[in-house]
Image 1: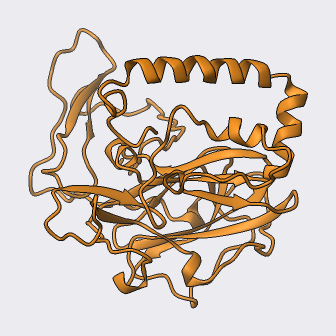
Image 2: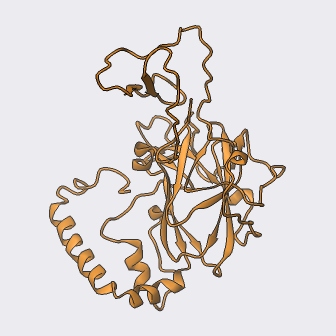
Image 3: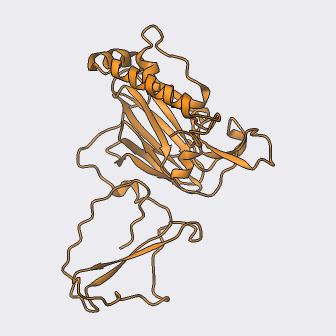
Length: 312
């Protein structure tokens, strides 16, 4: 059996141990990267039904037919949620200018082709978090400012809509570079996209460029919290606005997130101060943030010594 699983996708697999054990009761398990074998080490292990049997498992001949699924998720049409849902019409902007386009940018000057440092982007810039300035605290203390000013590097997208409204987002890994707001390249890589605070519904997923001809599946589409944006492809997702907060969406390849491939959704910001106050958590939140800021300022010497990546 072959299963393409991206970090941190989860599956429940039932294995019926009813084989006849023609060769023996030992079986190989093999984990490898889904695209370029030279990029990451592969790992093998052995499942033994008899702990005292030390034989190697049966091994297929090199000429045996092996199916390579590449980096593809199971088809969304093959994943049918038990609890059905129907997707409503989107309320957010949904033009090509609103698409989230994955790319790699030069740094610190995006236009410098000789730059030796690169950062990932999902919107117009790479995300960088200031640990002394958590989004939730800024939102919780903004009673008279429903949209507090965030630093551009925190990449906020406001979802200031009514409860149960639907929002759609297209994430592209294949597009005309001139359509991007800032210069970038599109390296060959799959991107497992993970959203905090929600499960999302997969309206469409495929290879090639996303176009207006792509038809969304609105009747009980697959539901996940991590989905692959395919190599040379796109994924189209939707979720309901019903969980006020600051929610991160990021690539779950650790070094991509470390290099800024992420953004944050600021969901129903006007509701956040009241909810935090009702919870009684605000005094403790303020104190912890003050303690952290003192620690950060004391240990962050020289400047930048404490944080060596995006902060995610």
